[in-house]
Image 1 (cartoon, rainbow, N blue to C red):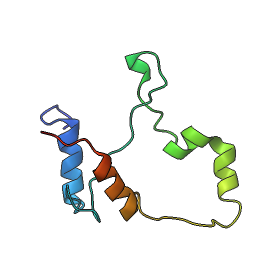
Image 2 (image 1 turned 180 degrees about the horizontal axis):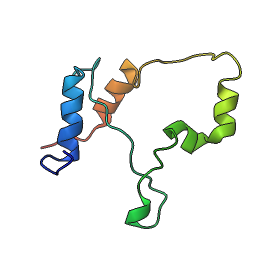
Image 3 (image 1 turned 120 degrees about the vertical axis):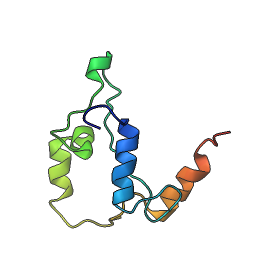
Length: 96
């Protein structure tokens, strides 16, 4: 991957396979990182800042601090809950 022998997609899929994640498995679906920032005006500005989390980039430090000051009223530990996964699959455009 570092030398360009395989694509980024193939590399991330290999990592997902090593982690036990498979396409079509609702409990262990593959995870792909969010790496593109769509607010930039040029191609070189489209990579997101990896020094901050996605939440911190979207909400800011103040919101993040406020979120963890008190008890969390509800929390889903999974990246995608079961219902979110199936809604995503239902809305996904089928590939012919």
